[in-house]
Image (cartoon, rainbow, N blue to C red):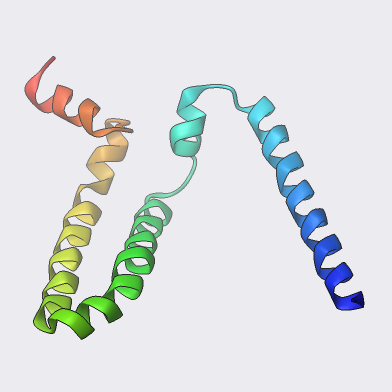
Length: 114
Protein backbone atom coordinates (compact mmCIF):
# COMPACT_ATOMS: atom_id res chain seq x y z
CA UNK A 1 0.00 0.00 0.00
CA UNK A 2 2.78 2.41 0.91
CA UNK A 3 4.77 1.66 -2.28
CA UNK A 4 1.67 2.22 -4.41
CA UNK A 5 1.12 5.63 -2.83
CA UNK A 6 4.74 6.63 -3.51
CA UNK A 7 4.45 5.52 -7.15
CA UNK A 8 1.17 7.39 -7.67
CA UNK A 9 2.44 10.59 -6.03
CA UNK A 10 5.75 10.44 -7.94
CA UNK A 11 3.89 9.96 -11.22
CA UNK A 12 1.62 12.91 -10.47
CA UNK A 13 4.60 15.14 -9.68
CA UNK A 14 6.45 14.17 -12.86
CA UNK A 15 3.37 14.54 -15.09
CA UNK A 16 2.34 17.88 -13.60
CA UNK A 17 5.91 19.15 -13.96
CA UNK A 18 5.98 18.10 -17.60
CA UNK A 19 2.60 19.73 -18.21
CA UNK A 20 3.72 23.02 -16.64
CA UNK A 21 6.95 22.99 -18.67
CA UNK A 22 4.96 22.31 -21.85
CA UNK A 23 2.57 25.19 -21.16
CA UNK A 24 5.49 27.53 -20.38
CA UNK A 25 7.30 26.61 -23.61
CA UNK A 26 4.05 26.86 -25.58
CA UNK A 27 3.45 30.43 -24.43
CA UNK A 28 7.06 31.39 -25.08
CA UNK A 29 7.21 30.03 -28.68
CA UNK A 30 4.01 30.79 -30.55
CA UNK A 31 5.13 30.49 -34.19
CA UNK A 32 4.57 27.35 -36.26
CA UNK A 33 8.26 27.44 -37.21
CA UNK A 34 9.27 26.88 -33.60
CA UNK A 35 6.68 24.15 -33.19
CA UNK A 36 7.65 22.06 -36.21
CA UNK A 37 11.45 22.32 -36.12
CA UNK A 38 12.35 23.88 -32.80
CA UNK A 39 13.48 27.17 -34.31
CA UNK A 40 16.29 25.32 -36.14
CA UNK A 41 18.54 25.67 -33.12
CA UNK A 42 19.78 22.08 -33.10
CA UNK A 43 22.98 21.07 -34.88
CA UNK A 44 22.62 18.81 -37.91
CA UNK A 45 24.17 15.78 -36.19
CA UNK A 46 21.50 15.95 -33.47
CA UNK A 47 18.68 16.05 -36.04
CA UNK A 48 20.14 13.18 -38.10
CA UNK A 49 20.88 11.17 -34.96
CA UNK A 50 17.35 11.62 -33.69
CA UNK A 51 15.91 10.40 -36.98
CA UNK A 52 18.23 7.40 -36.91
CA UNK A 53 17.32 6.54 -33.31
CA UNK A 54 13.60 6.80 -34.09
CA UNK A 55 13.88 4.43 -37.01
CA UNK A 56 16.07 1.95 -35.20
CA UNK A 57 13.94 1.99 -32.07
CA UNK A 58 10.58 1.80 -33.79
CA UNK A 59 11.23 -0.26 -36.87
CA UNK A 60 14.29 -2.36 -36.39
CA UNK A 61 14.20 -3.35 -32.72
CA UNK A 62 10.45 -3.83 -32.33
CA UNK A 63 9.64 -5.41 -35.69
CA UNK A 64 12.92 -7.28 -36.13
CA UNK A 65 12.09 -10.19 -33.82
CA UNK A 66 8.64 -10.84 -35.24
CA UNK A 67 9.69 -10.49 -38.85
CA UNK A 68 12.77 -12.65 -38.33
CA UNK A 69 10.77 -15.37 -36.66
CA UNK A 70 8.02 -15.51 -39.25
CA UNK A 71 9.83 -14.60 -42.47
CA UNK A 72 13.53 -15.38 -42.07
CA UNK A 73 15.54 -13.44 -44.65
CA UNK A 74 13.09 -10.57 -44.85
CA UNK A 75 14.32 -9.37 -41.46
CA UNK A 76 17.83 -9.02 -42.85
CA UNK A 77 16.71 -7.25 -46.02
CA UNK A 78 14.50 -4.90 -43.99
CA UNK A 79 17.51 -3.68 -42.01
CA UNK A 80 19.70 -3.31 -45.09
CA UNK A 81 17.08 -1.30 -47.00
CA UNK A 82 16.37 0.86 -43.96
CA UNK A 83 20.09 1.56 -43.56
CA UNK A 84 20.30 2.70 -47.19
CA UNK A 85 17.43 5.13 -46.56
CA UNK A 86 19.13 6.52 -43.46
CA UNK A 87 22.39 7.04 -45.36
CA UNK A 88 20.50 8.98 -48.05
CA UNK A 89 18.80 11.07 -45.34
CA UNK A 90 22.14 11.87 -43.71
CA UNK A 91 23.59 12.94 -47.07
CA UNK A 92 20.58 15.19 -47.77
CA UNK A 93 20.23 16.60 -44.24
CA UNK A 94 22.40 19.67 -44.80
CA UNK A 95 20.58 20.57 -48.04
CA UNK A 96 17.21 20.18 -46.31
CA UNK A 97 18.34 22.44 -43.46
CA UNK A 98 19.72 25.10 -45.85
CA UNK A 99 16.36 25.40 -47.63
CA UNK A 100 14.42 25.30 -44.33
CA UNK A 101 12.13 22.46 -45.41
CA UNK A 102 9.71 21.08 -42.82
CA UNK A 103 7.37 18.96 -44.97
CA UNK A 104 7.50 16.83 -48.11
CA UNK A 105 5.15 19.18 -50.06
CA UNK A 106 7.67 22.02 -49.54
CA UNK A 107 10.40 19.87 -51.09
CA UNK A 108 8.21 18.97 -54.08
CA UNK A 109 7.28 22.63 -54.61
CA UNK A 110 10.97 23.56 -54.64
CA UNK A 111 11.87 20.78 -57.09
CA UNK A 112 8.81 20.83 -59.41
CA UNK A 113 7.22 24.24 -58.85
CA UNK A 114 3.72 25.01 -57.59
